Length: 125
Image 1 (cartoon, one colour):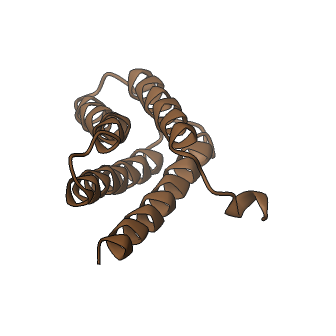
Image 2 (cartoon, one colour):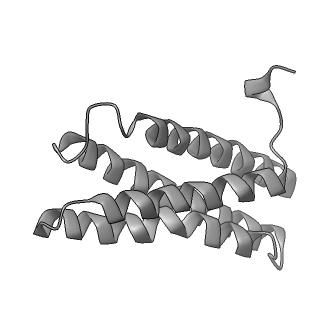
């Protein structure tokens, strides 16, 4: 199996989400102290750290439906974070390309959650 197609274990995904949340915190703290940056910083702190926390809840889901619901919340928060990252990247707050790695990781995490949610929904039918 190719490296990009390797199945991610729950522990590996949790570790990636925690690392992603940590990078989001670093990014938010590096934003300038303008009104717009403070607003976006608060927003991205909430949406960018939420997937790690909600994934922890998904691991303790009370049913398959509960698991799917929590996984969908993670996906929604990742998509919100992606838009926020794109908006921040449009500003002149960071050097060109500085946000490229975190944008790529966000996209990969979205793909993982889309696939995981589809699999879980398929198994529940």
